[in-house]
Image 1: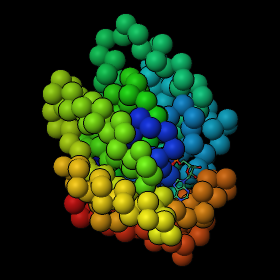
Image 2 (image 1 turned 90 degrees about the vertical axis):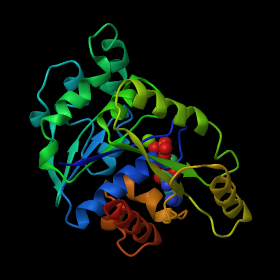
Image 3 (image 1 turned 180 degrees about the vertical axis):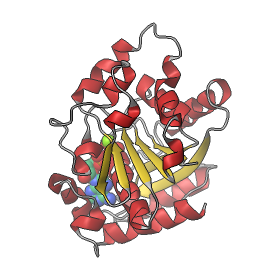
Length: 252
Ligand code: ADP
Ligand code: MG
């Protein structure tokens, strides 16, 4: 039965999508069967994994409005061992569609349960909000992985996120846990990055991944080629770091 990990942080620009894309790709590279689910209407994970968001016929949105079966939406083997449930801007209307619907917190979960056994890992990229889309990701998931950008306001908003995760666990999904925190965009040339890491380690009572993702220009370039980092520049520092993170996730 596949392990389901939601990548969440309501702050934008902290490296959620970059982590979702490259963790998925590195798990697949290690022989794990992976499904990546894009729950952000921006669809950056979809395009970053090489699927054209304007050309896909059916998306997560069709799943939410009950117009399609999950099996019919999945784009299979976008690369070896990697399937994707794509999204585009259509999903931005989902919040409205969900108003007044029974069990609206569980729409995605019910669908994912049907195909869960086909995968070792299911990785969900969340939007930068604590919206109903993020709640759907959290009811579907076994755990939440939280990317934290190594910058001055790193801890801001984190207590709110942890509170949300605890509420979901209490009321909607008792098995949900916090997978851990991963530091992103670490800049070895500045003291600030180091200070942030030490400060978070001292103040946050959560599992923190040993792997720290460096600031690496290749990671920022790869999405415009529709490739994860292990395909775009297999020997880059970014690729090496996401491989190490994948090892840690597998061994946990
Ligand atoms: P989020 O999904 O949390 O909004 P993204 O993953 O889209 O964040 O990252 C925000 C921006 O930072 C993107 O332009 C991305 O390419 C860039 N980025 C993310 N991680 C790194 C990194 N480790 N090194 C360099 N650039 C990065
Ligand atoms: Mg994103």
